[in-house]
View 1 (cartoon, rainbow, N blue to C red):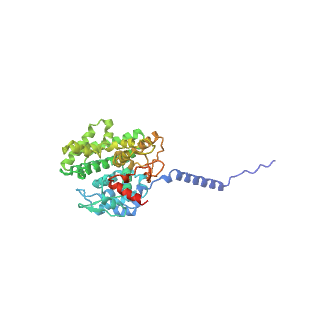
View 2 (view 1 turned 45 degrees about the vertical axis):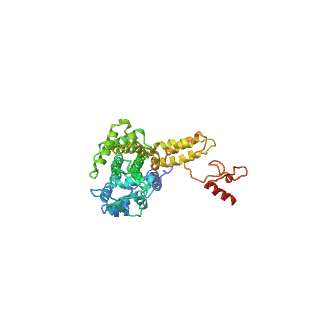
View 3 (view 1 turned 120 degrees about the vertical axis):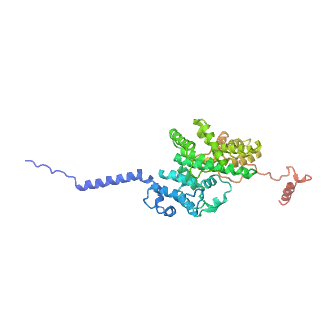
Length: 435
């Protein structure tokens, strides 16, 4: 009888090794797909010792984000008049500094933090206004460093952080349309209050700075809205804008929103302007808020036409970008500007920094501003390469750029022989005699 070959058996060890390998591969795959992109819960605030100390014992590692958010609002909120203690201002500053410790431009907030953090920021509306649109705000700039404590004036302590930290936090908060609307409402009330507080006999800077600051702050918020909706599809962007408008037009006043009658009237008139706009054009009308409120304020003060136009010049400076493009169109030698055009260009660029386009560029650095796009379009027309991130260098004596000053020459007109020479010519001639 023939012998049967022995049955082959698979060692148990092989199954064990195979199982371990599959488990290892699965773990690596999960880390590659999920692990690297998983954000720390509540942006790591619950485990931040500085934040724990600032907002109270309710926050400790493992605390839910809803509890952390509530603690932030409670620890930073001022009294009924809007005044804040040093501890209250320091609490919110510590939170913002912690959130901005990475790259503020890439900050993504835990959704549970967005509305509460906007509520906390809105409680510091005058400080937010100053940081977004302020002109000559020396104290805010000097005290913005993370280690600098809040500073005091007019009976309250002020919140101030570095500009990138603030813009990053506001942009991250604004992912929630209700949170963005809270900040917009707070800025609207502050703008109205600043305009209403301008003395009746104000002239010069005392008359023009308040509307300019307000236009800058509102322009930054316009840019934040653009940054938030950038990358969304049309339906998502429309839904976000609709939620913002609904909150602006139908939101309830906060207990601390009491305004004097003149400021309340300015806010009310602007809201009515927004309501009267066709539904499909309301969000675009929101972008003209600074000009609309300034015009209403100027008319209420019964300014003459010339003064009113001067006051509206800065908030309504959006024409500057077009002027820059005109000035940059090459005339004659490629790349060379006429002297008058060059002088105008300097003025236009200075003004354009205050335009909505310039302000949106500040909060959306990943995209070109309208000014840069227009600049490069004019270069394309002239077949000149456009540097989207130019650096300024002293003009060369040859090549493109302003012409070098003429050398002294025997064939040139001898201005030194003219009589009587001007003081400028006399100085040049003295320099000639030393050559």
